[in-house]
Length: 258
Length: 258
Image 1: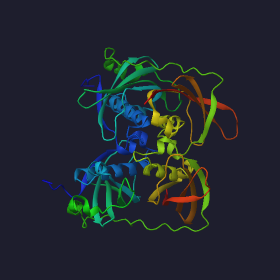
Image 2: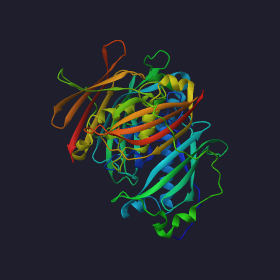
Image 3: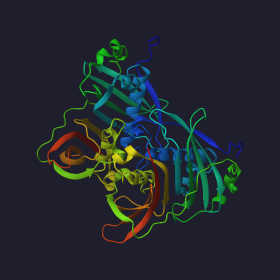
């Protein structure tokens, strides 16, 4: 590489009107999608993104994502997502996000994510530091602050109740043939009805991707009310013939009264 | 108005990777969303868009949309959507779209749409020509070609079969409190499974919005195979208590073998 870019990338987005909910605030799923785009642009520009990896049969896989917002952009708001990698290990990297107004005067919120790299043929983990002789290390920024809690293991008891089962369809599937990471966010947040969102807004949303799902899998949503304003969700998949369920996602949502 | 802008607006979009299907082609629903954004940007810039209308309690309502594609943008493709109004009547306008590569060398496809304007308090039609003394007429372009068929009334017989019933949820609802126009497109195209899309691609998609739906309404999908590669879909809503169904959407999909 001849140039060293900034460690932090900054990408401009618009809260498109049809990506906003009844209260004119950007849907959490669409914000998550913008974060994934920012991560993708950032890593592609720096030589370790999908456009380099895919032809050599490797890809990034999102493992965990946590988003914590003090305010959600509203319809037509322009905002920037700043993103940087703050840690790299052999099999995982951690990447942070700041959602900020274009003049940098207002911070809407933050995100933290964990990514693995896999071989697309074997589905096995790949040594991230072997890519371009550890190129990614040139861009690690440990100084810049992202003042929200890391995602932690979501603990759930046997009391979690099955609250919904849905089919997965064509629109749920991404370019890798798996259920789209962002669609899980939508399906989870759909567990609460519109009236709930009139009186509650999402303070923090956390999701861990445990296993991959394919089109046609049924998704079973188990929900547990773990403390005031905190709900934990486990999603399992079930196959058509076999009744055995396999855990695919865990998530935790913290609401605040609006 | 001090400036007269071009009659045709041109807006740049990216086929974002998470907006693409298993075959790496942009989902039709996301393309529809981009067309609605282009329409929104175009009308706002010219003084008769939502940002002028909403404060005076008026809004545009999409009545019909037809999209016909020879090719769909693939993941990471940049493309432009050109849009212009080609006809205005008292209660309806027609607006066209061209989806084109940034260098204008490749035309991906076209769109045609019909819009009404309503009063958001009374939900009654509004005289479009009364807005800014018929300002919209300054921007009508009848010369520019959009060589696809207009949407026509989708004819269905009593043979159409109920193929799916779904609940509507928080993520389906737009800033107006109604089921999002684009979500209907997704739900309709989800009637075919992934295997179908391996062998068939969408040549033309048509949708007419007949009545508004609210969160919690159940949507019933009736499908009729009207000719080779052509399917017509009627969506009705049913209320929780009353079993009576009301038609809300009609749609027609033409496939070509891939």
